[in-house]
Amino acid sequence: ADTVTTIAAQPEPIAIDLARTALVIIDMQRDFLLPGGFGETLGNDVAQLQRVVGPLADLLAAARAADLMVIHTREGHLPDLSDCPPAKLNRGAPSKRIGDPGAFGRILIRGEYGHDIIDELAPMAGEVVIDKPGKGAFYATELAAVLAERGITQLLVTGVTTEVCVHTTTREANDRGFECVVVSDCVGSYFPEFQRVGLEMIAAQGGIFGWTAASGELIAALT
Ligand code: C5J
Image (tube, rainbow, N blue to C red; front, side, top):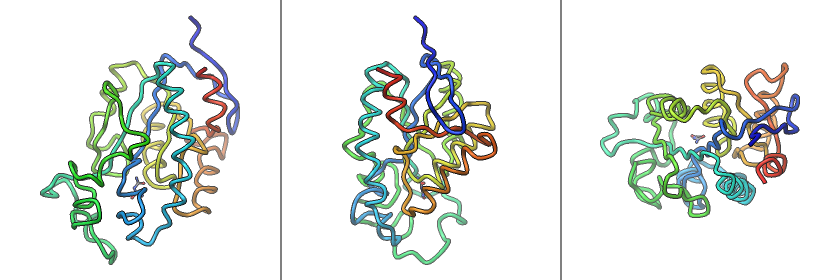
């Protein structure tokens, strides 16, 4: 069967080969999304991220129905924080730091409730979950090997936050030769202006490190 389909995107349409494409869902974790969690303790409005959950759940359902490879990532650290550089741990003056007790367990520590993915987007058996210590999903993880093994060349990038982990991962992927489509209504930022400009940056200059497209375009291509 022909698995290639062209979708409307910015800065221009892109041909997607569904057999070589993975849906990447970045850091949709309770610590970032839930009221009372780490993100909110940093002074952020989590409603800005909650907006993503509905469209992303719909895209995930379509991807699963189409047998697309699905990859989830989680930002976090080992309980002894040996994989958290002091530069990350100690910066700023937050009310809570990584590893401190928070509303949902120790903040951004692997195995804690708050570190895990929100119920609406819980990984299913057989889906890859990448635990990453950094903002990018390639740094110090098995992601490159997992994608190579499956012959993946294109990524649909979703999750939070647009200008941090989504950007870093997309830039890392672009440098590694992947074509990245960042799904505009399935990525979120705590800052509305960063959301808008973050998306514009990707597609500017002829698509300097990727494409952007609305989830409706992708769902139509998957069904
Ligand atoms: C942040 C992330 N913003 N997942 N993490 O610290 O974007």
